[in-house]
Length: 233
Image (tube, rainbow, N blue to C red; front, side, top):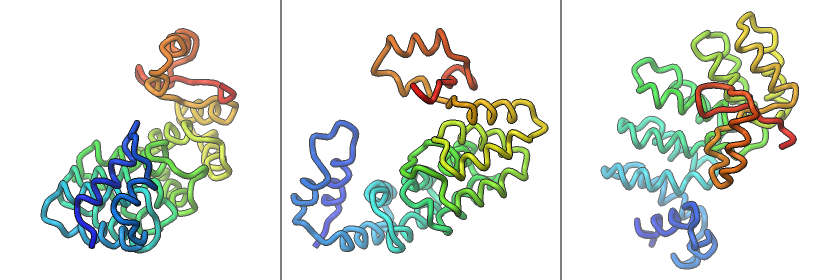
C-alpha cells in the first residue's frame, strides 16, 4: 500500500541535481504499478493538507493519461493559490488534453485571479515554462488563436512563441503576427522567423563569460533579462 512518504521519494528523484534516479526511487518504494502510483497521487488531491496536494501534483507532472489529468484538473481548480500555481507548472506533459488547455485558458482570462497566475497559465500555453513538447499541441494552438483576438494577450503570446523552436504550429502563428498593425508585435515575430530567438539570460548562469558576451553583443528583447540570440548558437 502506497504512502505519502512514497510520493516524497518519487518527488525527490525529480529534483534538480538529485542523486536519486526515478527508476531507483521506484524500486525503493517497492516497484508498484505506475497506474497505482498515479491513482494514489490523484486520490491525494482530496487531501485537506495543501502541501500533500502540491506533492501529488509534483509527481503527476511526470505522468500523463486521463486519470493523471483528473488530478491536474483538480489542482488547476484548487482554491489555494499555491496549489493552482504548482498545477500550472505541472501541465507541460498534458498540453494535448483539451480539458487541461481549457482550464489554462480560463485562468489566463480570469480577471479575479492573481496576475502572476494568469501570466503563468499563458506562459504554459505559449512559452517555455515547463515545455516538454517540441511543438504546440493542436488544443494549445487553438486556445492561443482565440486569445490572440483580444489585445491584452497578444504581446505575451508572441513573446512566448519567440522563445520556442520554429515547429509548424509555432511558425504558423508567428506568421500571423507578422501581419499585425502593432509594430512591436510585428518586429518580434519577424525576428523570430528570421533566425533569432528570445532567451532569459539566467539560462546561461553557468557560463559567466558567455552571459557577459550576450549582454554586450545581443539586442535586448524585453526588460533587462531577455535577449535576442541567433538560433544557431
